[in-house]
Amino acid sequence: MSYPIDATHPVYPEPRYHGDGGEVSARFRPAGHPPELITAGAGYHYLATTDSTDGEYGLYRVDMHAVPSGPSTHFHRTISESFFVLSGTIRLFDGNAWRDGKAGDFLYVPVGGLHAFRNESGEPASMLLQFAPGAPREHYFEGIPELEHLTDKERAQFFLRHDNHWVDLGG
Image (tube, rainbow, N blue to C red; front, top):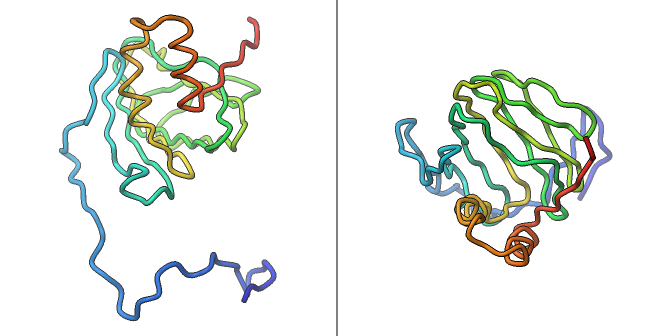
């Protein structure tokens, strides 16, 4: 049964858990857990992968090194992406303008939304990345260091396989 959306009758999704008493299924990750991947540009913490959330979402902490890094303007056909800046300054492109994201700033990018991000500050910076629904982005992150060894055709196939569609905005 669904109700109209208003303050007295919010609409929730259909139940997916049908037990009576709940279950022990939470997963705890201590703050000191090392990143699963370290590249020249960042350390990647796989907080919640598509496998661990049954495809609901993916959540990653990206600790960007002081060296300038980050992807150019692109969009995704299958997933939305959210950015939450934890520390430092991360340049966020919202499809219209570049903004200096600082601790506490948030950017949501719907499916198909143009976006980009960069650490150009010369200082380390950290952010949370969330993808919904879940997508195996860890395979994308792990493939980035190998891009320089691929042919143009292989590189294009890699990006297509990982739902990254680049856009040249000129300028």
